[in-house]
Length: 258
Image (cartoon, rainbow, N blue to C red; front, side, top):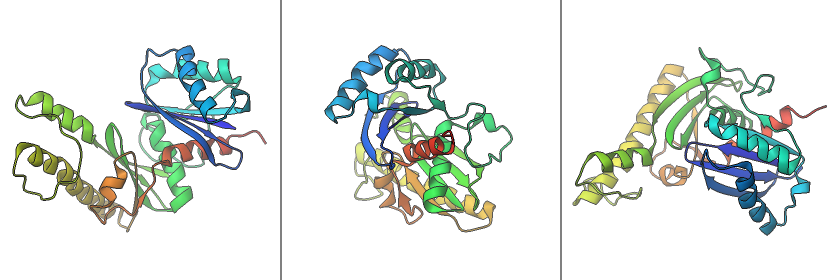
């Protein structure tokens, strides 16, 4: 079995795939650079046990992280408790099966590369991958699967928190679809600004990217808020919450020994 680890700025997702690519277990933890390999194992080991997965069943591991400070402890977790040396997306020699067609390929987040790999395998191309994470990103993948660059904007929860902290009278609010665009109170007005503001941004950026790329492109959304936004705009064609993990599984397959 394969242990796939996607370490983001806010959360780290652990998933176990069986030999056929089916997900046997998936668990999420807040990203904490101070959490040691032993602490991670105490948490992860119990969750694996609840799903009847023994650590001896794990034969390989793959890691994607955008938080470099977590990498040492994640590698140590794999080596100490699963007796395997993990594949790290972005390391020299790791085969992605795609070209990275930007000025500084080393700057692209490992999660964005995994999304590019998985989205092209599952949906073809050209396409735009819209990822609702700590940052909201739009990544462009051409017809042959190559990564062509993208757009990075502040994430929705990050924007809400900044608004609350910078304005004394504005409360924290949850992300939800308001009944109307014009809010009749402060909370409703904030929810409208965030939700419909992001819908408008999505529609506008998708239109501009397609115009610059000079071809129609399907849009695949991932991240926890993808299902909420796909219902509000025709710009998004697919919602795929496991896209990054699927990309890690695909990268693992491309790098297995013959």
